[in-house]
Image 1 (cartoon, helix red, strand yellow):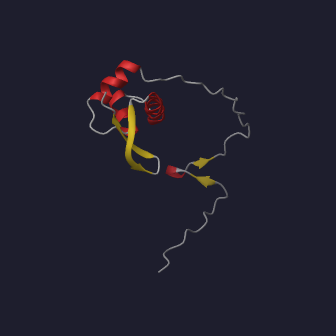
Image 2 (cartoon, rainbow, N blue to C red):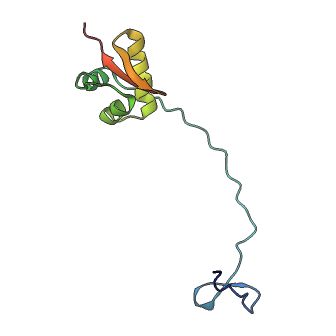
Image 3 (tube, rainbow, N blue to C red):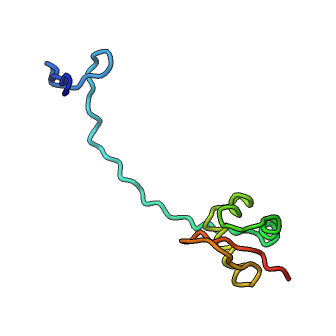
Length: 105
């Protein structure tokens, strides 16, 4: 079961390919500069979103994000705003994966 164990080399240092000895990197550690978080204001335009929704039988945030080309969180907030306006209504789904349908007027 066990297998051959590596035996320590006779030299004290580590060796790389070809038997060349590898020296440890300098002890100078670069301190990372604090990065500022960018606030990206990506929104779905009303026209593009409504055009994408009209062709869908059932509306999910994943499908809308794929069709419009935005992140799922952006598509989800767009759907929530449409729900607040009364354009779409939830018809199914579970655990945060809601399925919506356009309300016929």
